[in-house]
Length: 360
Image 1 (cartoon, rainbow, N blue to C red):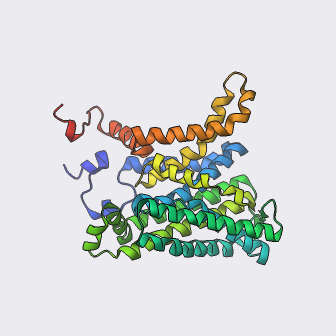
Image 2: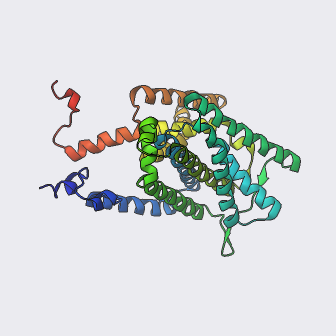
């Protein structure tokens, strides 16, 4: 009977092989295959606008996954994510403009710069916590943006650093469909790296540190080493995402990496659901598409043209309201909603009630 349970619900595991498997049931494997087929077919059915939206989602997903490792699993607050993206983008731009470096050089270089920044700005985490740590990471954003702005002004790139399309085997990647698959592979690779990290000793150490540092230290976990490792890995991933963004947009400018971008990435992991890779992906989709949904809603109102001047303000206000609503009424985020829906269909026609309310 117990061996049939995993196949029925997917929530009961009876051996280590099941625990290590990426998919637990035939339904999960079929769903994953169907989702992969949908992703593969999408670029051949979508318009250029929707292809661009998908590419934006993939780029956001890489950044959100990297921040989720740091904050959602290791418990280290960071408000400097936009600075890390900017560091990767400027690394790619500067190496291209100054040395005509190809992308297979600039991407590892961006990762190395991000890792170095992760060490430098991860050191305060050894002594600071909470709000003080958040403020120290916020300094990263201002330092990187200032240095990037200085480079732009000194070199005369008033409108940003222009970057040619990367080439693979003599073929320049300019087509939207090709970019779609490149960024899809990059996002999928990032997700697999995160999954394997979290199933390793490193991931278990991060969870212990987030739960209780004192207990984790008593268990023999090197707190300082694992905190720095979280900053290094997260920063390197974010810098690579920034470099990919630079190549995708064909230019780098400090205006693209405002403080609001850092807030958006924090929103992705909060709205998506803290401590969940699926939450990071759902949050990336939601936050990326949200401004376009607001714009589409305004277009349906009478005299839609008259609202064009306030669109930016409406986006800001709606974004803030949505974050507050999630924090108040859905602290588990979109992944919490997904799990409730999933449980409903898995347990149907039976009802699931929390233990605390079982007697009511």
